[in-house]
Image (spheres, rainbow, N blue to C red):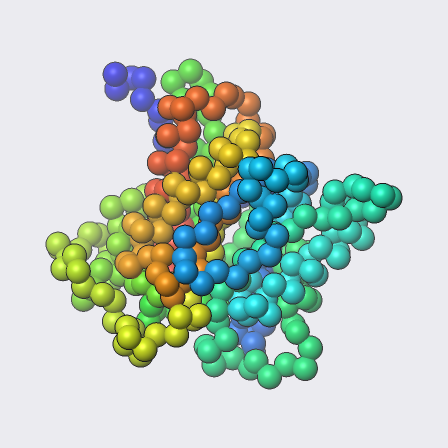
Length: 330
């Protein structure tokens, strides 16, 4: 019945941090044309991940599998720099350890900080460093973590590209009010650096346009029926594209309490948002990965029906976040 349907409304900030407990920080280097984004919270949180692209670059993602011992983590790191960017997680790990945060064992604190990177080494920035800059960028991003944060060409999205268009950091959120009075938030954050295009070929219309709330990415409307088999135009042509040169890395979050297995299911369904916003998506040239996060700030049992709703809302929110990342990029 219509009166028993969930009520959805835009999150207060339309950001990942509308999910209770989360904070986000950016750091970037304008000469390097790259940067780092850190997601953390005041207390450890449940996390899982799902990799769908063919060229991922990650750290400590195996421990997020439901059968692994560690049940919660302390931070997530999204970074540019390809494999060099994984050093950002070491910087975050070290500063959190100095703050006595992390897994307590043998008198030590070991922060659990999974990470994923995107490829931006060919974007024209000054990459002739003598010392890997990402370690310090990770620390700087962590120290700037807050509930408010910028979108566009910042953090891990500083040097990102979406097809031949500028990519960047995007975020979106939604609040779900259930008929029984329970409510929860869903938020997404994406560093968009895709092989696929966010735009319908031959237009400035976003593939994600059917899911736009208000004019959050320009209100450009929906394009006429496109050629369903058209590939996006690239700088070098499809056959010559470097298989290591892309990747969209993202976080989908809720303040519901989830197990690692339930969080992994949320990560899987959030990849639907990639496919709705980027065409083609999950290519061999991408290392697409979604981290799913649950802070547990809202109580409520996760029935199969609620998990289905959560997955659907997560996918839509992810598509919106991707489009916002491109819209706000410069």
